[in-house]
Image (tube, rainbow, N blue to C red; front, side):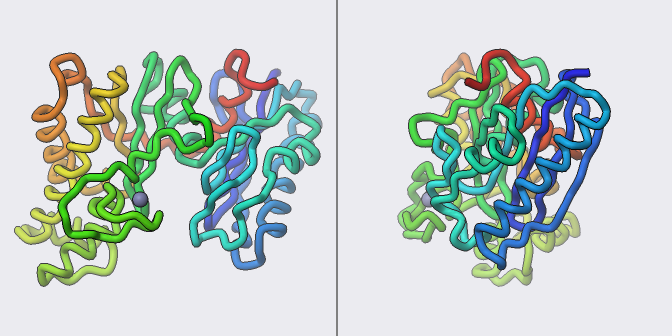
Length: 307
Ligand SMILES: [Zn+2]
């Protein structure tokens, strides 16, 4: 049996799996990410998980083709973290690829976690079998990825797909976590939706509270969700005109808002796309149980990915 190791490092948990060449997870582990203990502890946990998976696979006589990783932050094409969010203090500057290669003895490729999620959706999820896909995840932040011919486009610095930092105007100077203002993430992420709802007199602590209020009939909550959906839809439409993908997949916590938000997204997509991309389906993500791990493994299982 030929297999790959896929690992997924997030702010709260580190997951990994042994994945066969059909994209099936044959063995899976999860450990807490020791974020507060600093970058050395975080990297150590990631390497331990990968090494344990290698040992598990070798113990069963499997042939290992490589190790793929999806990790939080902006990852340059050589596998070094160049920027990180507040969830992983001190994480920027970490050379993840070299550490994983040393821990596993395998060819390694490292991408951002949203890039890995997108690869999972293309490998086994909502965009399975599509020649190209634009995948956007809206949760605490807004991330994106463009996958073409089974591989994710990372760009010169690993930043490609960052649709959350497309300027959307509005003139309100809403601060974005990146330091900019009036970017998509500042207007339509989970926390931005909650903030907007509260400013208008609603009571909510998390996005789930806004969704629950909308389901219970609150016009204010429905308005906050559809306004965010419309803003996402306009940014998506511009990106669809630019890339002309075969399918668009929308994931993250906002998918749970259901039709209220998705209908607004689709309405604005239709209003602002050119005739070609206008008919492209905008689908909710499959939300695979091990999607990031499957996506990370596909970095080294598809043709010509490493080396
Ligand atoms: Zn930004």
